[in-house]
Length: 90
Image: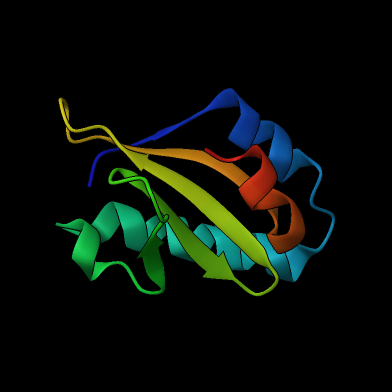
């Protein structure tokens, strides 16, 4: 899939100090880029009440995604701890 990154996601990643977590993030992003459809991504779920917003679980953290229906680009928007992601995303 064609992926795009929001500036806020890049800021969220800069705050991560754990190198093994960064490796897991990279693996998930590579899997997303290699997927032909949203259904091929592991551990992805649709957020309740939102048709185009998704999350991917990475340990205690969540990766917030938005599928643009017009361009079919998948925006990687946030990477936050599970206690914070649902307060700040979408």
